[in-house]
Image (tube, rainbow, N blue to C red; front, side):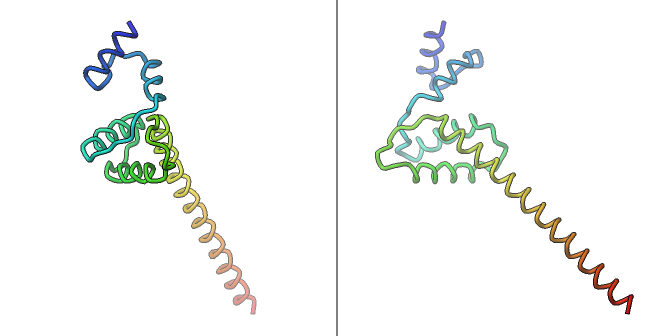
Length: 127
């Protein structure tokens, strides 16, 4: 049965809804050639973005993927999809974490400024 799913995926170029999860996981970890043309890049990046399941602007995700390719070693002409999927998801998590850090820092700055202002008002009212 697994061989049938592998054959169907190879012929159609994609898996069916009935493809077992472990087979998809195996496919994601197989080294595949990096895209060498524009059409190939779009097909490849669409597959990676679908696998990453990130709700974000597609052009920015494709930009991030292109940048990831640029940062691979010169000897890496093949790389597994899982590498790029995990990298996209980690990048998304980093963006959320950075936004939270900024929000917390700004809240803390506002609280400190309010405390300083309260101290100044108290000092002025005591005089």
